[in-house]
Amino acid sequence: MNSMDPDPSATPDLEPGGGVPAGSTPPDTAQTSGLSAPEPRTSRRFPPTGIVAVLAAVVLVAVFVVVAVVLIASLG
Image 1 (cartoon, helix red, strand yellow):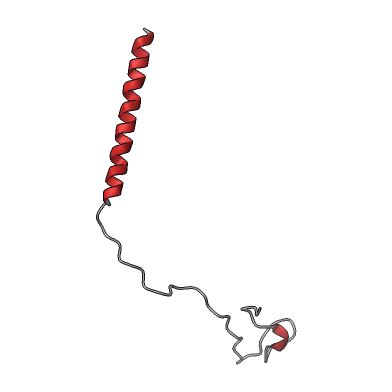
Image 2 (cartoon, one colour; image 1 turned 180 degrees about the vertical axis):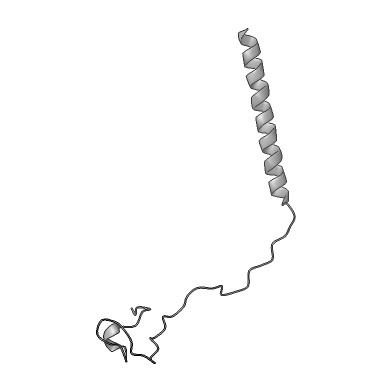
């Protein structure tokens, strides 16, 4: 398997210690960043599943509060 960085011993114009002489450009490393395909556009609307999840959470909290109030009232 080849490394993405060039082998220093096989790099032309490389001085001892890793420097390059004036006027020489060191070899470039291959790039793997960036997108291979355009990203799809995102919508600005709140999805229906999100609305259902928020409503389910509100109902769950309401049931919890009602049960807590009933339990506290039955203690007194």
